[in-house]
Length: 223
Image (tube, rainbow, N blue to C red):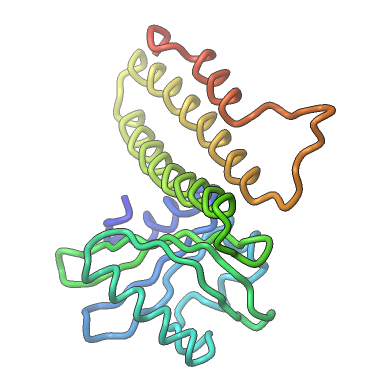
């Protein structure tokens, strides 16, 4: 899905995710990166309008030291051909803010290169305490799970459009299950980003219990 050369399809896929996401692309390794999309969740999380980024390079929108660091990480990700995860301070005109970023490389058959990433703002200064590391791991893994879930839902949507009525009904159930799991992953991510512990006098259901509930509502034999 993220490998499609069709930018309209890519934008649809990114906007289907509840995780703040973005994409940057360059025609070849000799060209500069240009931001090609910022999804709705990213706009809501950052407060930065998409028009402020789309069609622009890192050098256009970031202070020089930050732009160089961003470009270096994108280059490194594409060279290694594997996802890269890091924490960085970014200043997009609203003061420096701390972000947990995960990027993954995409190499087009025609030679273009693309970075697809998620960016989750950290609520307070990132430290080296083991608990904070564990919470950061949860944020990273939930972002990865959400991206994979979005790809799965997109594939199921395509299959449903060409399926006979009986199969389409089963695919609808699978899609609903995916959406329920996606909400649970979002709840898990939000809980890990909370700066205060919840009130234990009236505990909310955990992400694990909600996931079990969703699975119970759509058993394998129902699908």
